[in-house]
Image (tube, rainbow, N blue to C red; front, side, top):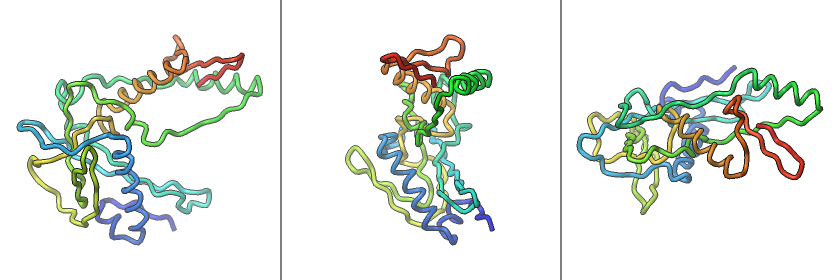
Length: 219
């Protein structure tokens, strides 16, 4: 029998797989903290606070048994206001023609293909200068300032708060759900690849080429 995805944090943390979901959420919060993605600050008067939303999924093995419980803390981006919370939202997506061409070249020349996944990729994107984005604390957790960082503890109190909170997370890095998340991540990735000496294709901006000592990598 397949394991159902919980519809709420309360269901996740009180159900039969509560330990797995709790550890998964702790890993997600630790990713934010280790990437210095946000700090706890007083919310200035007049500033809108964006609500969070928690998304869960289960990566499964071939026999459909759980391989990994995944939790993603996202922002309700529809609450953002253009010119106050974001500006640029455009990010390139790879063309299918480019993918087919890469696969055909690899097959014709008997080349090796490999892939990788960047964990919490959006947390590497930088929020635009001058933009102040505040995220409400997710319910069920207590967050306390700890010098330049913060600590967290599960409380079990999932009562949602109303109105503007006194304190919230000030976002310094992009996160999933933000309107500028994809654009911020692409900008950071492009700068990193360029710093390595990689060159961007003029035909497809998602195709990069790196050459060194007679060896060429396309990605």
